[in-house]
Length: 325
Image 1 (cartoon, helix red, strand yellow):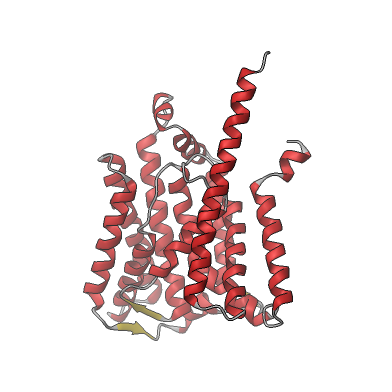
Image 2: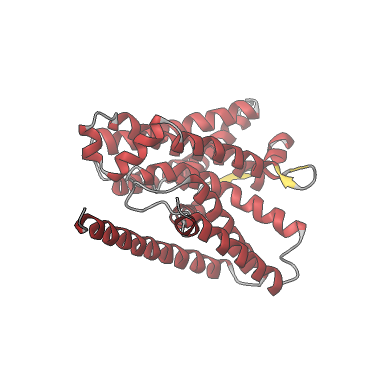
């Protein structure tokens, strides 16, 4: 790869954007570049990061899962209920992860086996999972989780870096290897680029697409553990506000909304960029609603830039095809 092409990589642009935004926020407010603010940035980004890592393979494969936040909420509530019934918290956490896989598989069955549109199916399951969560707890909440869970969700390693951030980065590394260095990962990208051609070439399209939905559910279950450990609560409707940032992180990270392209490192970098943006706006005194507007506009801008880049690539490819040998 030439130096010019490398410099134009999406991840390089994200790195420059993130560092520039970080420098601006540091200069705009003396309260931004502090250990407390940076630790809060990392802690607040954890749950969104797990959700984004889970839905990224689904989008790469050419589908969408907008039920990730609803799965997070239901998994958190079920974990809390199981723990409150007297079960060890880590067994309850395992139940949450297994439940997430089952919920993701249910989405996959409708989308893949019944060949129904993923947007409509996961919109429906989002409503169903959210409704079930409210039915389980009603208007009450479960709090005061064990200290071991609180330490994992909000504690610091070496009094510096959140444990949750270290786990998130480790999971991202494993997922990056899975998507970018294995046969399964290559199949995910191939299916996202052209599902029919992938089927004709002998790829296990059904199994691969089912697995990406299971991964989405699995990551929602993992996110539930860290949500409970950080916020120390489980109640109906929790996590709904994390859907928009999670999808924004994936698209901003360079994953094409059309499927077939994207990288996990790009998603991690986008998580940093969005974390700096939201935390910086909070430090500067912007309200939660104003921060949501900023996130929404970021998603729209990322989609527009991605579409423009896609059009440019297509034009260059067409020009190259017409060029004489």
